[in-house]
Image 1 (cartoon, rainbow, N blue to C red):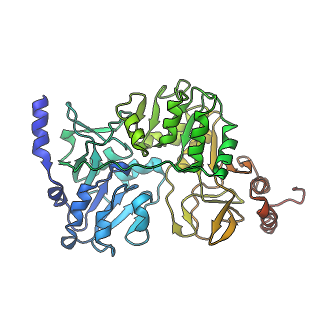
Image 2: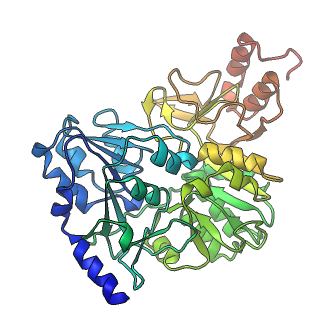
Image 3: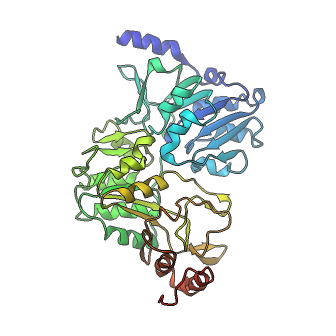
Length: 445
């Protein structure tokens, strides 16, 4: 059996340059998510710039150098389209890279049903095991959906990729793909934890005060979630669970401190559930072949219906600004694109529907812009800002000045609650604006 599998492997083994020949003008090429993004293939494809026109590359957080985007600043030959803008994507946004709006849990569904058909799919993965399976490693987000829909499917093998146990849709068999590239085995992209500021530590302290034994925790990215992880690790909390889209170093801190057991979870008991990982080399070493973790496709991890089945769920995410109606913007400054919706709305809705669930959206009360201090709690969002969480979904908002609970509140109650956690220097101004918008009562303090 093994000999037959190896023969099939060798018959499908090609170089990156040969793989790049599979792309034709006008094709849609899709790369794996995050640390599974194609690297050697993209470098080889960039060499073909003058042979190709209108090749559209679709990706989500491309974690490696974008060779094709660098080779063609005009976007005439290669145009990138990103499900979420981060890392290397940012210098190309608005030039030859464009954002694809989505709710993250719908990503595999859109890949299968709504996107322009993928002509060539390329995913970085682990070497093949003795059973003929390749593990997707750092991301099970939508890899199987990509391969199902692709005309040509290619795996780019990297021996540095951690092997992440599932879960579901975390691996693929040699018989299900067309070609294999043995890569240069470049290091997997690592991501340092964002150090928390004094303000973010204060925000985290408000949240920590509401946590209790048995909570199942989802953390987004940034200083506040990292601060929460550090505080949990140093706390007396126990029997915490994990169900998240992104597995980051904050979870490693909590796990090493013995805080995570998953013993109270109603589903996936004892398992730390996630869809993709990004972090330090130590994190990748921890998740490698770890049976205490389970990697799932994102339509499972981020499904609000699945999240709602987990009692005592806590979701902690960051945003850019919020208005007095409770509309949250987490992805743009006006019309200037910053990141994407990601899974924030998925977890905001799922956590609220969980029994005893709590959804926190966090932001410092102010921001420095061009030497001027401005409130991040605004009468209305900056014109052109994208609404990530509609006012109907927002549960609790946290700044360094406290927590504003918005669910069940009328417009004047929301305005009052949000102004109470705004920076004191801006509260009078916000009250005047609330009065002008007819969302302030004279009986308000």
